[in-house]
Image (cartoon, rainbow, N blue to C red; front, top):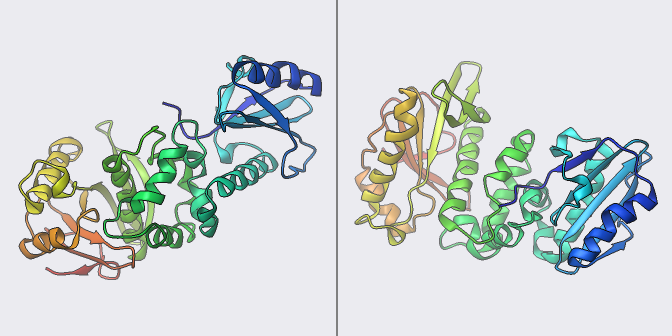
Length: 335
């Protein structure tokens, strides 16, 4: 499975003729390609190329002096196989900005409705335009409301656009967008679990904390977030139970208990305590969440916060144990 889009770097001189011979001709011979004029100017002295394949793939190439950058959701020409890969923030600004403009224009041409959500389009561009995952990731927002039940695509996408446009996760774009994955099919369970981490980040930032994802701990595991302010430094691990209709457990309360137990007996047990467990029930429909809210089941780990977010911004939940985070401004607690 291909990973989210990254750049390949070639520390060599590329002439117009070499680009045609070593890049265009192999692409054309193997899958059918045409060289077209780029839609935007990169500036900074970079010469640019755009290649469009018959199967809908697109590739970009920028060259200047004795260096060049390649990005594409298609097969990589053999002349670039042994090149190093770099993230969007690790390449020259002119190259990164040009590639983003080219790919965003293509994305919005193929999915016009996403043009209404510019920050979300940019944030998830590495997966929305990836080789294997471009259809599945777009479909997850378009057809499955990004994991929210009983919600339309615009309602759900507007919710995530509003949060992402705050910029609090911009620095962590590659890590966080990559969590959505680049599978060639929609895996609602896994993708919804990925969006649970975005919901957790929103809860924490709405409560006034700074968040950093993917915190390595001494056990060799990574926990989902570190939440900090002037007086707080707390690790947070997130889990999202499957809706009862999608699992064998006999009802929503059992779903919450069993899923939390799996997490507790895994990463949190090895970590040895100290982390807060967030149990995100945002995949639950109203009646299932009402049962959980009414019973407020224990989740075999303390401290823990069990909650459900809705795309209108409302978050409702309860706590177990002494939670070392002040979340009153982000969650309506029913305990």
